[in-house]
Amino acid sequence: MSTVLWLASWYPNKTDPFTGDFIQRQAIATARFRSVILIFVTKDASAKRVVCVHPDAEGNSGTALKEYRIYYPDTPFKSGPLSRLFSFRQYIKQHLKMVRKLKENGEMPALVHVQVAMKAGLIALYLKKKYGIPYVITEHWTGYYDKSPHALKNKGFAFRFFLKKIFQHASYFLPVTRDLGEIINRTITPIPTRVIPNVVDTSLFRETGNQQPQRFRFIHVSSLLPQKNPGGIISAFEQLTGSGMDAELVMVGPPDETLLNLLQEKKFLNNRLFLTGEISYAEVAEQLKKASAFVLFSTVENLPCVILESLCSGIPVISTRVGGIAEVIGKENGILIDPGSESQLLEAMKNMMTGYAAYNTKGISRNAQALYNYDAVGQQFAWVYDELLKSTLYNCVRKSDYTAEGYLDGLEIVSLDYKQLFEQYKGNEKVVFLIDPPYLQTTSITYKNYWSLVDYLDVLNVLEDHRYFYFTSNKSSIIELCEWVGNTTLTTNPFADANKQEMHTAVNYNSSYTDIMLFK
Figure 1 (spheres, helix red, strand yellow):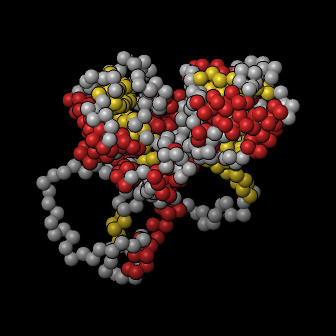
Figure 2: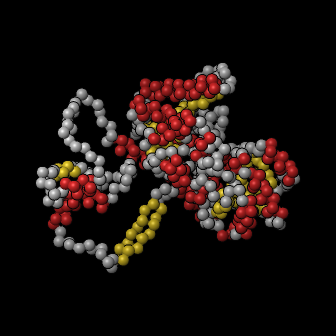
Figure 3: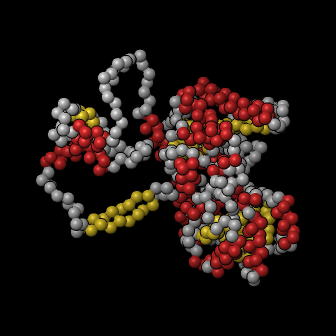
């Protein structure tokens, strides 16, 4: 089994146990199917020297996942450009030191997976340049959205330059939403893309059939930062209860002083509105089990894990239509509203309360659990790794002392679609066509352009009444196909004038196909 090296820009650690916990869950999911080594490097102001925490020392998952958390001490400069430069140097140095150790131990990876492009992607870029190891990227950062408080457009030249380089040299992009994938392809660089969602621990987040609370309970879980707009939720909730609707609101997260002052002004804290503070992942699951509906009123998001966790818990969602949220929320499991519109939020909360019986909470939970569990997500990463490593195999040409100097002398080299070139030379008796198409059964996942069966068969037009060299192998069924065509008496399309019915089928969150029935 090939080893995959994960380089994480964010990851739970002793200085911040919550940052990147969703990345850890993706790593645990992947390690169910592939061997994963994960490296995370961060500064620790309390450290006196560099400390490498080995697997199992900080709550490792017990799967085929080796986590190395490396902590380096604060700089002697405390702040400013020199401090940032020193810290960056240590960040790179500790990564490369760990890579050398992997090489000494015979654990060099076949593939690298970057979690959050900057700045771990710089290490992946180096490994590709030095060792030819391909890498893929999963991104969670909301900075690609212009409304983000940390928007990419406001970053310096060096940040934007290297970010683009990281994406340009990646073999695959694996965003958690289609929306983010489209933004990267449109604003950074075109790159083969496949959506693979975040993971939910479905042993914790599940529909339990508990009786609903006497009072309808809305819940909001977040960092309670301004971009989450907790003040807007409180304002709409105040109008809701002021109109006579019997509801309560639980807010989970660390409130800042501004939010606390607002709540004191409203004077309904611990009456209809309750704050839990920052709580553990398991405690969030318990809070969701007691809630009726989840509310999110953010101005910018990618796709928060708590929405997926709410769905797995069988809880319908009210959310702003931002980022990739509309990809998972529809009329069967929630209500979407415009960001910043308190009137729409108020109306949605009223509609959620009055129409709650229409939601199939067991169905919401069942559908979400099938999509976001550890196995469903881990298997998707394993599939992408396998496809990429297969395609990479054909691009690994070993260097040798063979020389081809002068081999192409005297040739005229042109770049054209083969059909155009064929039209130019098909009547020339002195021309011999060299034809080397993809195999008939080749997976086209790594092609920039889709190569269909019709495209493949069109190539055969070049063979008829012309001299040629045609390259194939036993991986292709083209010879069998042509022999069948030559031996059969079938002269017309058997499907001509047939009726056709189609049914679109979703296999999982990202994959689908169309069943077709033809009849006469």
